[in-house]
Image 1: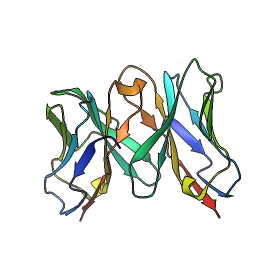
Image 2: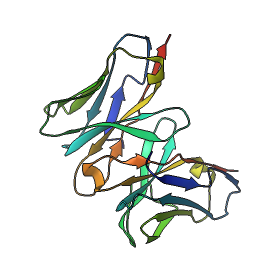
Image 3: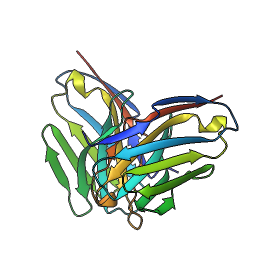
Image 4: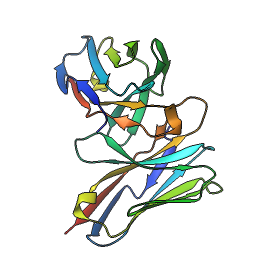
Amino acid sequence: SQQGEEDPQALSIQEGENATMNCSYKTSINNLQWYRQNSGRGLVHLILIRSNEREKHSGRLRVTLDTSKKSSSLLITASRAADTASYFCATDMGGGNKLTFGTGTQLKVEL
Amino acid sequence: DAGITQSPRHKVTETGTPVTLRCHQTENHRYMYWYRQDPGHGLRLIHYSYGVKDTDKGEVSDGYSVSRSKTEDFLLTLESATSSQTSVYFCAISETGSSYEQYFGPGTRLTVT
């Protein structure tokens, strides 16, 4: 079963708007990572947030982590058509050096 | 881009035949992973390696085996391919395991007829 579940499954917005996607997980984690996948390509790492951190920024990306609710959110500000992709969260539950990926959110940014 | 290549990039094979996919890295990273990606399931871990000749099973390892005889190469073998193994297969590498990011290869699209 999936550790991480993204919400929504699909999101369509206009260029310039903000996009928010959420990830919920079931067990305690060491860290949570967000990846982007463009159609037909491999995944690209975006940001990693550790369990003792609450918020991280990278350019137009902002990630929050609420370990009490077992959830994380990825905010993309001022979205661009090039942000059109699938976004996945992945959790490190510890004890194995492996990540468990969610099912992803498909983001479409329209001009 | 991290130096990861996968071969072949596309393959069509028949049910019951063995298939080997290759992942090659030039980054000298210790950890290597094989995932499969299917609609509605995201990425699921098949096997991973934490060093030469050191491997472990992932979530969906049945019907798959792996080998790593050199740091740079990680092979995934489907012992007797089935239609349920039709998927896109991704290799990933990581310098220090799950504590840091993984870098992904371009993927191999496998169709089992």
